[in-house]
Amino acid sequence: MRRQEMAESIFMPIIELSGIVGIFFASYFLRSITDGIPFVQLRIPSISEIQFIPFVFFGALFWWAVFSNGWLYKYKPGYPIFEQIISVIKQSVLWFFLYIGFVYLTTNFVFQKEIPRLIIIYVWIFATIFSITLRIILHTVMGILYKNGYVEKRMIFVINDGNESPYALEKNEFCEYIFLGKKDEESIQESIRKKEVDTVFFLGWSMESRFIQEILKLTTIYGVTFSYPKILPSLYSRPKHESFIGNIPVVESSSVSISPWERILKRTLDIIVSFFGLILLFPLFCFIAFCIKLEDPSGPVFFKNRRIGFGGNDFFLYKFRYMYWKYSIKDAYWVDKKDDEALKYEESLKIENDTRKWPLYKIENDPRKMKVGKILEKFSLDELPQLINVFIGNMSLIGPRPHQPREVELYEEHHYQVLIIKPGITGMAQVYGREKNTFEEEVSLDTYYIEHYSLLLDLLILIRTIGVVFLRAFH
Image 1 (cartoon, rainbow, N blue to C red):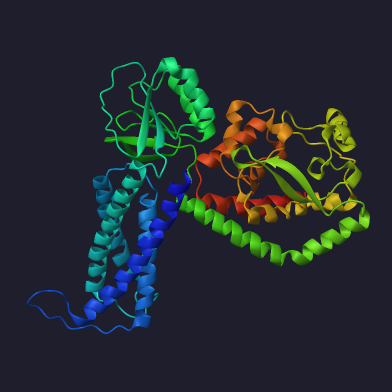
Image 2: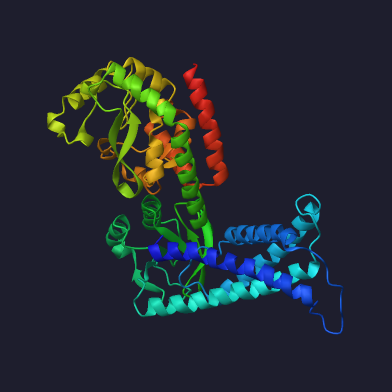
């Protein structure tokens, strides 16, 4: 997602929910002076502002949940304003019935007093108008910015399979179309690899051709959106969302199932958990550091290991050092590979004792481990400093495990899909099989996580991680 689109997806709900809160209190004030019904004067109900605040909180929360679920906070350049209005009306009606049901099922349980029905009706009407108006203003302003070049247009490759297309694309200020065909296959593939295109739009009939299947595979690997007209059958299992390109309703197939707000919530949880985790575990960190220094004072407590993360960028992963310093690989400590005796020793151990197949390795009965290191690894305590990586943002709590550059160099092309999200301390492959997985099985599990992400799945992986660590420690 581009920076301006991410900003749009962040600020839109903040502005809208602020307006919703204001509308709640405006409706409360309006109902305290009139019922708004001509020739009828209903009794003014009594409900204090303190009693009213929980209604505001849950009302705004329900509004955010319903609109997020309806993908109304995902910025879609060029999405027709009429379609946005229809979506807002549908979701606001859904909010109205869900909120009324929640309020009247939880009165005297969550809420101290019954809310006047007219207030909810006022909120629904005014909030719907406000939401529509907000999107009209946003659509108009963004159209001006795109048209005058202040915001870069989305690059869309429109591909025909060789047959005559039944559609005509309507040009707009949000997108730049480049029309291509089978003869451009190599240049299309190269542009996808270099991420020079935002969306590949297949404007044809057959998705069975090798040409289209190859492009579809590459968009999956490199995180490029693949779209096709809605009348075509859904032949692929990637996450799909309805959208528009020009004036044509399409289905967008993306390689990552996480929505913008799920991404923000995931990052927020990462920061909160890692921050409090580091504080609460500080005494344990000090004790482990003391034990490491007691056994081998020659090296640092934290071992830095170069890994490849999101977008193919490298970073230093932090672990408690569980090997003797003379055996620890030092590429993160300004020591050249050709001068690193520890690396040469590891290569010899891999030849003799490697229990995993290409490109990963696992050295059985590793003689380089300290006594305290064996305990740290058995209880997975050596992984705890990765909370620092999570806090600073180059890792997440849940995600594919990051690999070393020399391992990534051996990747085949389809393996690169694991690099389109942040790596994690734990993940699908760590709780289902762990070292027993082949590399292909590990990639398959991580790919499943990428394409089926949900906060519930994250929670299940965290719970399962605790169980796996416990069983491993006492096995």
